[in-house]
Length: 186
Image 1 (cartoon, helix red, strand yellow):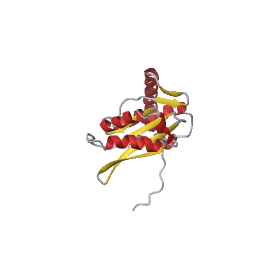
Image 2 (cartoon, rainbow, N blue to C red):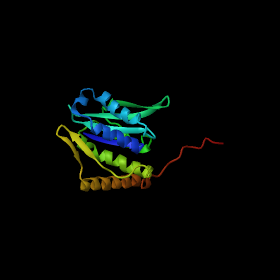
Image 3 (cartoon, helix red, strand yellow):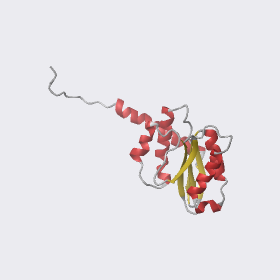
Image 4 (cartoon, rainbow, N blue to C red):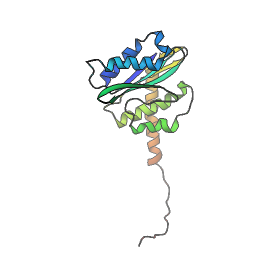
């Protein structure tokens, strides 16, 4: 299983830790079990800001992904969870870099989507460097979850930086002689 967490890092990290402690029986009803684990943290007396988001990938009993978030309703933090079909965005989900996934995502094997994920994260960090930085990737399949090496991450980050420069150059280097319509303004 792999769990990423965002928003209120203190609360989200505690929720992620609680999720990682779930035993095999929890995966008979995963959405309820994930909400129960989050709710136990959210209802504890030590929770500060409850705003949290977690992306969860489990290989039990079959490979599935879930998006769990907490929202304040009636003064209380409540967890909500859903299975992910396609993609989900956690963290700075208003960052305009999500354009990349909204425009270019298509259902492909996860390994083929890594360059797109890297581009999104690298550009998102440029737009919100106070909250977004660094890249870590874990892939999960029926064989389990594996962390991408630091060398491969560095290569992906470097490629994304280069793509960003090349895209910028497409606009700044574009040269066309424009023609103008007859003036209709008097």
